[in-house]
Image (cartoon, rainbow, N blue to C red; front, side, top):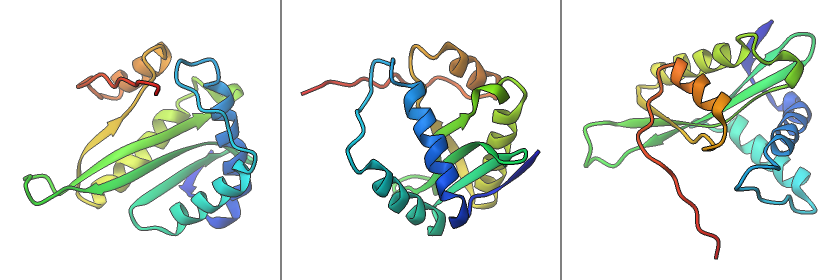
Length: 153
């Protein structure tokens, strides 16, 4: 098992894993159908993230990538005593590799990266029906501080 920062050469694997994440969430309350050219758009987005300074993707691999985590750093306005806040946008592990501690290891790698960059808080959105996800984040010390609501126009 190896954890490392994603590189441009990993984009095809990340697109595959991201599509698996989207398929996993198809039965959730909030789902956005993919556009016709989603692969090209996802490729451009991943290139931007991998080359950028404020976002990071870590990959976990055995012989091939089996999961990833994506985080972003947000600089807060000078109104606050907190300079940087982090967010975890995505985390996904292929189903045969779940419940083996890989998600925790990915999260720990991202947290260490955030600490080096002076991030003081990390936010994550978890689907309200995702009981496994809620237990996972609670076990890592994340606290519920708000409830996100959505309204379709």
